[in-house]
Length: 176
Image 1 (tube, rainbow, N blue to C red):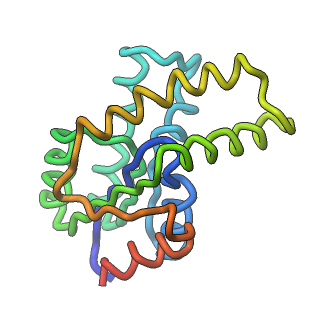
Image 2: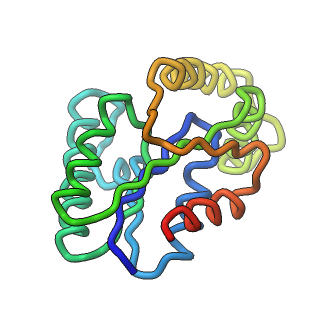
Image 3: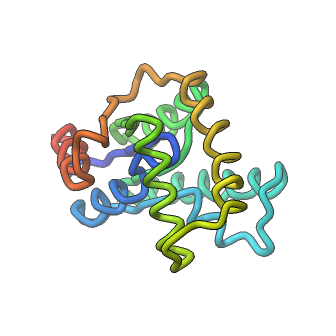
């Protein structure tokens, strides 16, 4: 199979993690690099400019090293309009095909998914009002980010209409 770099992008609750894990599972010898997973590697991670810079640097080293060793990479991250070019450049530098996908769904659907996921993680049947307010505080800027940062290179996949398995199938089919 040819070497590739896949970007799976999308707003909070769009299904990036579930879909990227399925694509990774279904494609042999492929690495998956996800911002939330790399954050866990940084001691005493705090959401600030310094630690986010460290996380991004670690992700770039991982991408470079995997591609250097002939291993295809799936990157799950939030990407700005100008953030796509460095990914294309690193893919080309390593003789890999580049594919970008942006998952999306209606705002209300995505917010409901985030609530459900958080209830599961917290092992509760109802979320405390303070947690809902906290999540809404993250959700609104995240939602606006995607409106302000279109990625023309990305194939948009409506994850509201497709299951995670169907989204993963579509991504894999585009690699052929």
